[in-house]
Length: 144
Image 1: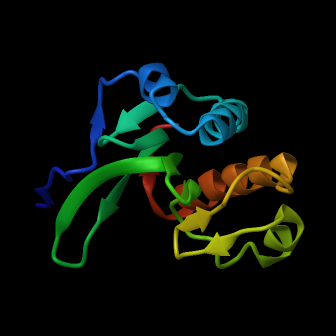
Image 2 (image 1 turned 90 degrees about the vertical axis):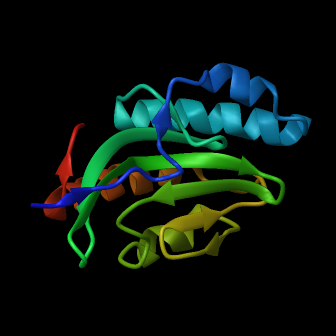
């Protein structure tokens, strides 16, 4: 039987709108409000706060090699000082053709780092979100 764990970054009842309205940088706040619209439309899901600083959509169950089981958001984003960070949980390794069309960005395993939305194709962002959710369902139990 799996050992269910509770991560520090877990879903909570904090208000997404209060969080976004508290973002001090005007440009970052505007970009994140635009991303909120893109994520809502692409996922068809309601946003939830995950931890103190991440807005997540949907959930999936993951299993660690040691037998631990946990829940985490399926996709989301966070307003970081360096710019918005997007999270697509299967990672971005298979999305190289789409990423070429995205605009300026840096890549982590499951993180996509943007300085701003200037020059970023939001249609490509929506496609990445949809593909990520589709790919996540292939290997994990999901709730979306």
